[in-house]
Image 1 (cartoon, each protein chain N blue to C red):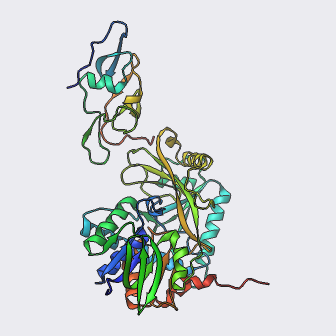
Image 2: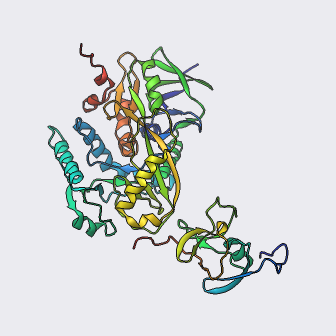
Length: 100
Length: 372
């Protein structure tokens, strides 16, 4: 559904990480949200109130719609985090459990 | 021009909309005169407790009135749901007052005993739990929590949904709601009241002042006295997390939608509703001492709101002697008292007479001559 405006260039380099265990390759300048969208992931989480599927909306850190679990930490704003090699990204369902 | 309404309620916050809804249920033709969206509006900033324990020192009738409201709160929740389809999330499973030291626990316990020992005090049950007993009910508390007192009457609600449900209910019941109608003057002529507003004059047979902070200026226009001041409370709210807390704790509660609210600061700063980082840091620190895992939960917003506080902390309910038909209602616990304001107070207003028990809430209690 999402297509990059330009082809990834050789200079930008590839960053490999996983989303729900699936290997994804991204541009070094990508945010996690942009890389996920480009790789075809549209459902980032479910609404914690209604349960409906949600994905990025503002892509600039305001709307809190793009929350993902990154390296075990829930509710990270995926549009504000740059991709890093080897990071483990997981989509979310419902409210994260925080109590030990 | 003839009379437009039986009763005008000045103020469309939780207090005013509760009273207006209750009056309309009794068949009254009611208008609510409200300010615009720039109103101070503590109803949008409150902590949403329906709270009993610890209240009433110096005024047992305040506890009686609060308990009456708490006891009828589930009826209100049902009424609002039946009228609007909105579930306001009322729960009364009991609440805790936490203590961070043995001294504090002893102090809170002594406070309850003092409140309950007053003549005429309606009793409420409470239990004192030490750390071990408390951690059986709230398994995630930190080592710094010395204990808590528990009262089964305490509860909470989703207060923003309550506010919306009250407005939708009063509209459904036929109340006329007039926004941008800040009342500038009130005149009594030929047995009725004329409220001058920015948008023209509204006439009604009776008037109920439920305008929060503005009651201080409005009360003298009908021969009443409401010495109230703003008292700032700051609140932190976190992201939504899975339910872990099923009872409100005085300073900390998890809402029905999963956020954690941290609150209950008190500051005397006048009409200043800015957030101060010193206060919210202390509140966050205390919350983390109560539940250490909250250190990893993100804060999404902080805000401050201004309680409508009387000199002695108790509500003011009054009726004018010089302008019969003018009533006043003002309090800081508008959520706790909402059920009484919908289901009990309106009958008295329609009858034209506050009940005898309400006499202790008259603003005349502040008319004490200064000692020489």
